[in-house]
Image (cartoon, rainbow, N blue to C red; front, side, top):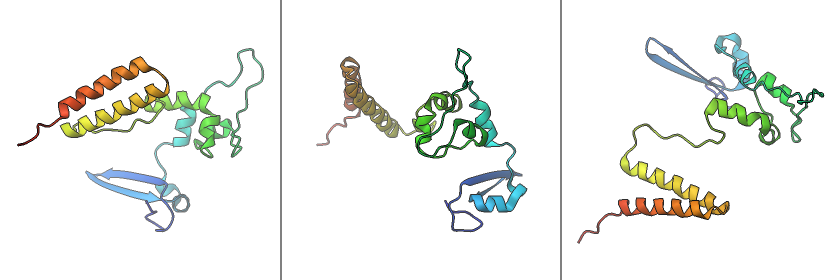
Length: 170
């Protein structure tokens, strides 16, 4: 999505305001948002929110000096992340995983993004989604060499396939 103001840079700030049942959305790049200043200030600071959720004691149990975590690729420290709420690069996820995983679980209820599905889904779409999930689970079971669980998942897939078989018209 492109910035509504300059029309060239990618929008990284997305604001939605609802006034008298009218919804207005504005999408800004960081430069235009800074230029607009307090006019587009949000009611809460996401960086502060993440930092507050991510506050984890980094002191060692024996009372030794606090551990300093730094990303090997971009040199961002975990302390800097807690201050600004932004990671510096993809490698930061791995470098800070010990502290990010509990934070992500707290915010999203899971450590891995599983996608979203609508509350009401057509029966055919529901079946395709369930099949896709089971096939992925089967693949992971085989990779982990959990063959008993894989056989159970395979049987579930066969049941769904039998249900979805349409009789041939003559």
